[in-house]
Structure formats: C-alpha cells, structure tokens
Image 1: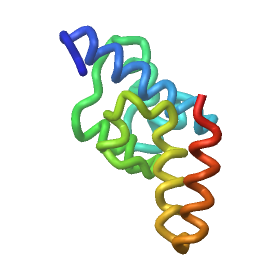
Image 2: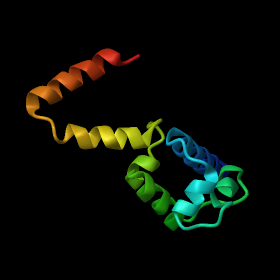
Image 3: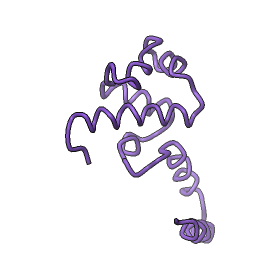
Image 4: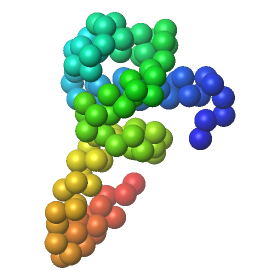
Length: 108
C-alpha cells in the first residue's frame, strides 16, 4: 500500500490521468463533466492539487467505477474491470466457467 504522502499523491495523480486517458477524454472535459472548474483535473494530474474524497467520488461516478476499484492498485483499468464484472454477473454457470478458462489461459 502507501508508505508516505508522496505515494498517495503519485497514485491519485496517475490514477486520475490513466482513467481519463483510457476513456479518451480531455482533462478540461472531465473537469466540466463533474461540475468543476476547467483546470480541476489538470491541476490534479500535475500535482498542483489533490482531489477531495468528494472529487474522487464524482470521478468514479462519472466513469461508473466503484471506489474500491479506484483504489485497487493492481487494477490497471478499473473501468474495464467494472464493466467485465457487471457482464459476468449476467452469465450462466457454463458461460462463466468458459470465461474463467479463457482468462486463466491468458495469464502471463
């Protein structure tokens, strides 16, 4: 997990940037979409400020990412992971086992 304040700062800046880029969105557009000033996300990504818990919540809500997935350092793409989990919940047992087999065969 995080050893010091700088680890938290780096994680938040990188996480927000990664999620935004994975969704092909500009920092300005994301800022405005979550009801903030034009420079809000840019300031976070450039470590000029940190998001509040409420700010993180709005970012997660916008991209439909559970807060727990946002903070899971092992998830490289929390948005895609959340979408995959939602789809998995709709699968029957046979389809789920097939998907599990495929996932296991894809491990590096």
